[in-house]
Length: 106
Image 1 (cartoon, rainbow, N blue to C red):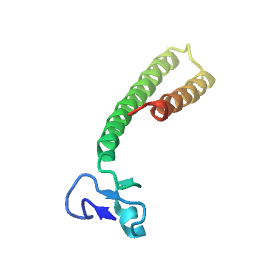
Image 2 (image 1 turned 120 degrees about the vertical axis):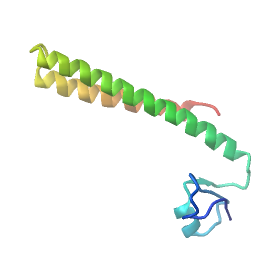
Image 3 (image 1 turned 90 degrees about the vertical axis):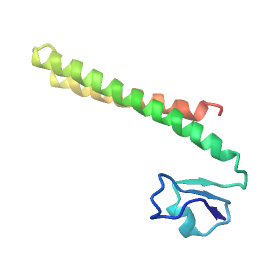
Image 4 (image 1 turned 180 degrees about the vertical axis):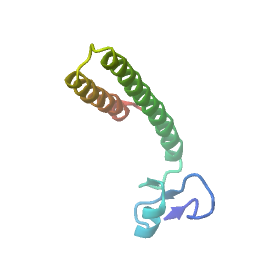
């Protein structure tokens, strides 16, 4: 088991490698790579960047839809039920957008 950064050292992320490590090491690490291949660190960083982009897409989509429904509601065009349906719809779209991460080849 290899722990790249110990907790409390001021680093941004701790990476633990090796599946047979202690439970405490795995619990404190931010990223756990189960096999002993350091090349997987590059893949983890790529997945993290893709995930960050999708998170920002989801946040932007949710905020735009909420502002549109807020404006329509203030104008008397949208009702409470339409706002609820829009909120649930945005949540489902965000989930489906996030599922794309699992299908990507890195």
